[in-house]
Length: 291
Picture 1 (cartoon, rainbow, N blue to C red):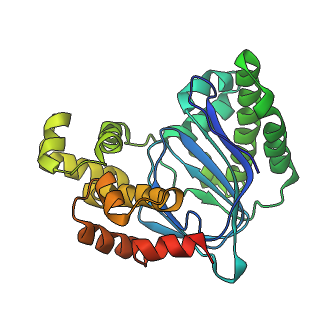
Picture 2 (cartoon, rainbow, N blue to C red):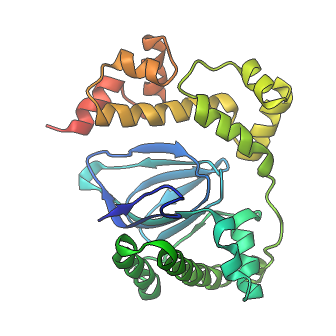
């Protein structure tokens, strides 16, 4: 199915409807987004780690990842398995004004954006006609929309989607309605932005700390507290994520890819890749390409 991705100047929504991955594509990903990601899984098996908690990936799972929230997906493709999902990624502050006429819905929207979610996933939502209608309608309209019409239709889609999620969330019980605690993530955003800009270069914590005007100790403590992983772990995962993309979209040699992700020692890169992905880079490329 089509995947719409444009920059925020063109289109403030990254969107996919029933997008399918097969043949070990995206077998393992570890990343975050600048905005909220709402992920509805139709088919797939594997595990997801968010805030050091493991969740089973299965059909009917709906996940809500907050801005800059790390999430680690490991997919299983054995026995002909595929990974099929619909998703929407957007910057929450861009659409907040559209929720202000409805105080209760607005409060839930802010909770979803910045609150302390007790868990990121809801289960047993697959096949829901209202949710499918929202995604299918957006999928049909989005490629033809421009300008003000685009922003209006996206806002209507998001209002309907968040309204659905609010009702689903509150069905979990009375405690689910207490959504007012703010998430302490703003301080880590410059760190993640720095990593995104520099992961392809050799990494030195002291250099990073100087650039961000923090001590190495405070920098490391702040990142671990906000994300649940160390800077080194996140940096390694981000490099492997990029290496997977280069292995599957180019024919560049492994040594070139190692340097392209900031690791000048190819042997160390291969060892790191295998520790994350379970197989060596050249084996991953061969397996991904298939017979």
